[in-house]
Structures are given as C-alpha cells and as structure tokens.
Image (cartoon, rainbow, N blue to C red; front, side, top):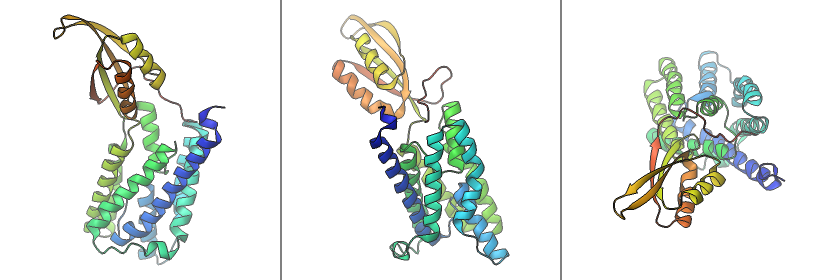
Length: 292
C-alpha cells in the first residue's frame, strides 16, 4: 500500500484540513470582524458581498452560501485539471470553514476581544496564513484564489502568492470606494502579512540551486535522486586548497527539500562543501510531484 493512500496519510490530511478550516472560521469571526477587515480573495469577496447586501439592500446573506457559490466553478476546474483528491479535500475545507463561520459558538468568538485595528490586521494575517498553510501541507487548499495560485504554481513552477496579493488589492480598492479607506488600508496590511507569512511557512513552489563540491559525486547523486527524484550535473575542477581534482554537482530542488537533503549529504561526505542559492525561475524539465 502506498503512503499516499494509506489510512495514516488520510487521517493526517483530514486533521490538517479540519484544523485549517477551524482556524480560518475562528479568524474571520474574531480578528477580521473585530477590525472590519476585507481579507481579499473569495473570503474577502464574500464578506464584501455580505456588507453590500446589508448596507445598501438591508438584508443578510449567510457567509457560507456566498462562499459556496463563488467556489463552485474553480472547484470543478480544480477537480478536472489538478487532481480529484486534492479537489475533494479542498471542498471539505470550504464546506467546513463556511459552516463554522456562520455557526461557530459565541464562547469561541468572545475569546478574543480586540479594539485595535492594526493588531487585528497583523495577527489576523498571521492566523490566516497558518490556516492556508495547514491545508497546503495536506495537499489541499482553502479555495478561491488559492485554487488559482496552485494552478499557476503547478503549470509554471513559480510561487504565485505575490500575484494573488496584487489581485486581492483590486478587491480592497473596491472596498475603499464603497466603504472606508482606512479599513481598506488596514486590510492591505492583513493581506501583506498573510502573503509574507505564507511564503515562509510553505515553500514547495520555491526552488533552490545546490552547488556541491565533493569527492563522492556518485554517492551524493544517489541521495539527491532517491530523496527528491531530481537529477544533477557533474563538473570536474581543481581544488587549489588541497591541490587536487574535485567534482562539483549542480542540482535544483524544491526549497522544502533542502534542509533534509543537506543533512544527508553531510552524512555521506562530511568534507562536502555545499552552497545553496535562491532560484528565481527555471525553464526546462523539473520533476513535479503530481497531485492526487
């Protein structure tokens, strides 16, 4: 039985998705509502729609209904293009977070009483990033623009959270025109905090270049191949410090694989010299673990 389909893997994914959904609903009902923030993405669009209906048409639409309608089409596209299980776990996240946002007990909501909008924006943004990261670690997403971000990242092998941040700013400009400029600006701080924190918490779509000078190129290549399924290119040079021929391996791997890989390299060759470089963009064949 493969790890991907094992009961332990399934339980882990369910736990991460449900934890992410609970955190997101809690964040919306506490930090976001306390600061009057518009988070951006489909969540922000949902809150914006609620506020427009309440303020200009004097009727309330449940958060969950709007969220489900907005996510319907992206979920179908995700199911067909990215992966079936990925889409199903993502839909579970959307369903649970939407339901809990409407029906979370008041005792949890009243647990946090903040009267400082800046604190709400910063800590709400951090909690938002954590909830999204939990879903991403479960090979799922919180839906909405995250579906779009995953699609771009899978297709072009580049981190798309900055582009999503720019798109979210458009929603915030609309909020500023309809409601309050200061709330929209605080919402930008919320979204910026989320984007920066998410980039630090989840790095699958970031790449790192490894330059490894070693006397054991074959053994280290095997480690790279077995641990990451990526290839490597070997160059032969001359080490002036020891006055002898050395080999240099060049390889590009995902950023979240670097720490474990460097440790394995050190075990195979304690004398290896490893330089890790940030990779902005790659063009060519690069192994992508498929979504299930």
